[in-house]
Length: 174
Image (cartoon, rainbow, N blue to C red; front, side, top):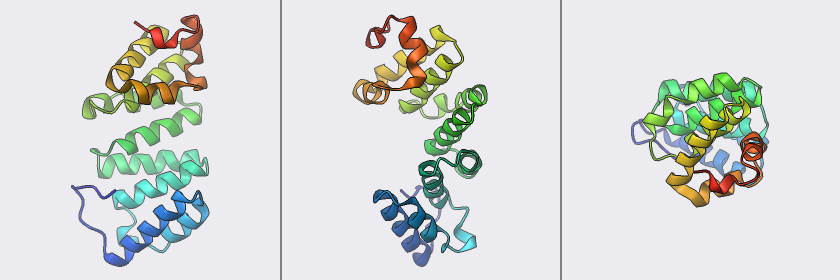
């Protein structure tokens, strides 16, 4: 996961980080958090550590913490899309959808090949009842990676307003 732009973590902290990722892989965010808590304070703000903390908070649905951690990732390493995406998703979960949209929008140009960004923008626009805009974002995401977008969209309640406006023909957005 380590970013090419960041300096390497000390070995002992790297081991705690690896262990935390392992616990997350076993769907045990509590144990993952315990491993993260053993990382030295000097390494605590490293983007790789923050990204795993973001995943832990995501698993626990600690949305306020996700907003803070995602923002810290964006500030420390704006070239990592997960910070942008995680922060906005958490804002949306907190019913701050317009803010989620506004903070994710600049990421579309920074990560032109990441289909999750236009997909999430489509979801947020749909929830804001901007259905034409939602359809445009959804089309863009579909052009980028149709199988992945179909998988994400299959039962996504955030797209329901768009789906309803299209008479249930989401895949035929054109």
